[in-house]
Length: 382
Image 1: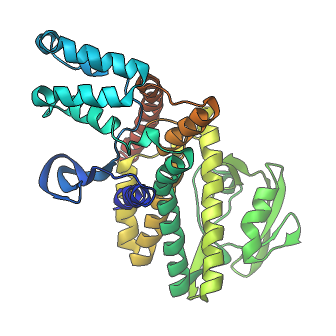
Image 2: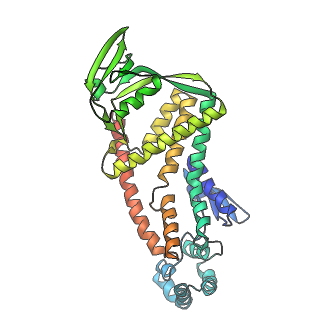
Image 3: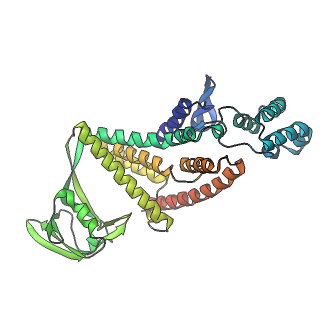
């Protein structure tokens, strides 16, 4: 569903700026059902994974591309029109290229290679558009995921809020809190000798930046001094390894709910950027998850209640939007970077540049997917 609304953002934005997408599919693979309406093929694919929008001509066609995809027999049989096509493409003569493409239609019109070339030569092809139009179309997908998350968070805060407490719900094994013998049920009274409110606990711990500090807790009506202990850098923030009890409170006014939704979105965005920077340096690889982990987290959230499930849905939507902005092809961020570089150089790249850049991006994404799947399978094993 989240991929579907992401692709819907691209689709609506493309129509708005004058590009006509050729396909809008829910799922991949051979279509179970399809319908063509006003030049757009809508359908449901047989593989129920996300969806896609087919925007014509994502990159400028190059001479020889169609020829390489044909059999030797077809290359020989269609040598003359293929030569005219290659000459036209090399000279960037669009009219001659379209004429040569049309000449090949009776023989190759049913092939995907010819259809891709035909779309790339269309007047509304993506690569022909002004930079601002291309940026609008590509940015719309991540943007709608961001807006969806903010709207969802706002609605959740309006229905009910989560009030922080100072009471420890649990202590994670192998963390500074466990080593300092903090217990579930302890109520944090002071950090570093200074009293804290419920809203200050997390910030005060992070502010220690790994330096030793003491903590005073209320344990069964008795004040106990803990430490010194040192917070450990984890996921871009200093933590000691405790879970704090949170209680549901009354819903907030729309303005306050919206401000809290923005605050939540900003906090997740900041932590995501820091996490990606750590991952690039080989740190916090245990924080990476795959679709297996997403499904497990969603299932657990659903068992915990609709509110928790919708909260996880908002977080996944936000993550989908943010990760798509990474400057790698085939992600949206890669297309944004390419569009800006092409604007600076004054002309578009050939398809070969896109292919080579995509190979690098896909290789990096495959490594991350492997790490995430490996983490999830380990967690499945306990």
